[in-house]
Length: 373
Image 1 (tube, rainbow, N blue to C red):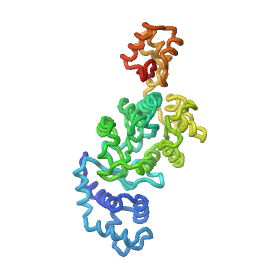
Image 2: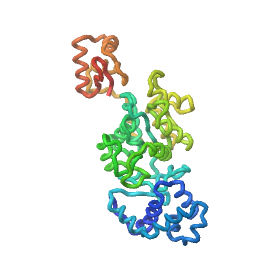
Image 3: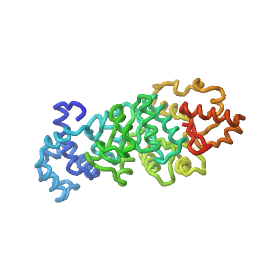
């Protein structure tokens, strides 16, 4: 295990991992038994004639418990200690506080890295995997700004919006937590291996699934409840009308969390979902500055780097480069539109566009179509 485990932790937590191992896929039953018997240790030490009185245990489940009583909690815990991961449960003080409040919370969470401090506010950021440059850029800036203000950015490490927001948080040297639809020892998707490695070092990777569990479609809606449950507020930047992001938003709303949605053009498929959320009562994400101010007011906090909202001129651009950059959108902007709006033409315009590409400000996604980065 990544960190040293004290004897007192071992003696307490070994019963929890033993209990979690009996019914790894039946979270509802684990919560019912914990509510009835108050601790995993009590379940382990409870005589069989007392356990069988539980309304939640039939003969099949009793047989499973008795089978695991032949394996000592020490054996199960020591086996986990050989794997580079840790875990917490609803019996522990480091279990995410807000998550404790939801009715279908996971009994056990495995993790890599370090858990966010319970006093640290958390905000979820989700959106489309096949997101636009605009959606990814906004998600990145949101993640960066939240992290700069001492807010934990919670997302799912998926391609698109998720990884953009979490990379933004890491660039701000802030806290970010990824909740996976696989076990934490499996990087999914594989393309996000650099982000996965960075999160292990500087953030947190969470899952309710035991080691060596591959991602499955059915796991992602369950994963989404953890993202919503951990977050005081949820931000959806882009989403189709039927998507996991809307499931996450609906869960967040059912848990009493604020839901923010980024409005978009009515002709954009990835804005249909967010515009729908707004018609259903979601808060409109008008600007990142207003978002941070609202969240700091909600959390009764003043912490944050105000310079992130400054409107300083980018001194790396010339006057004409700035003029061109200002008319290029996160949506594709055609060369003719740029020329019409700036009154810069032909060779000079092409040279200036090349300069902006070399400075990492824009991309040419199709011939003569440019977007901001």
